Image (cartoon, rainbow, N blue to C red; front, side, top):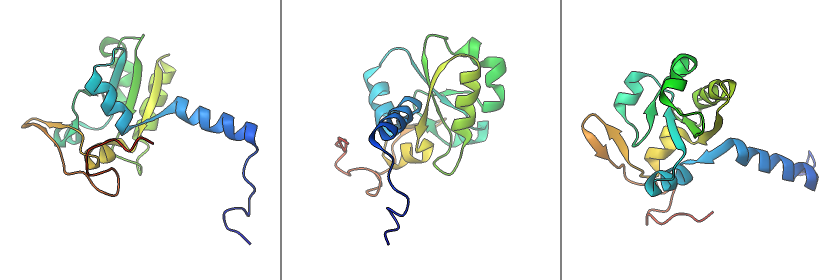
Length: 152
């Protein structure tokens, strides 16, 4: 018996709905990096972590807004007609999901950046700190070391 098919795959209609919905709710670090690099208008990237985490390093170009402050401060920092992308530490953390929920409650269009700051740094994208902007070496288990996009 197959471990993979012991529960049958979803039918085509259900699979289409599921995967289209996931893409409506999520984006990845490569797509966010490309949009930031290209200066795509109408996009705000939100780091929902603590000040200590932000200071340790964050996505270059992100806005720092911890989840607990979103309800009180979002409307003064983030225009309503933007798409908000939230992130937290990484795949083992649901902080970006909590932040996305808070933005959705306020009526914002929102997506979660899967992989979070961990994969941002592991894929070699710009990391900002008080000392300036740097890049970590690309982790060959997460992205092509050539720096060329995986084109997936």
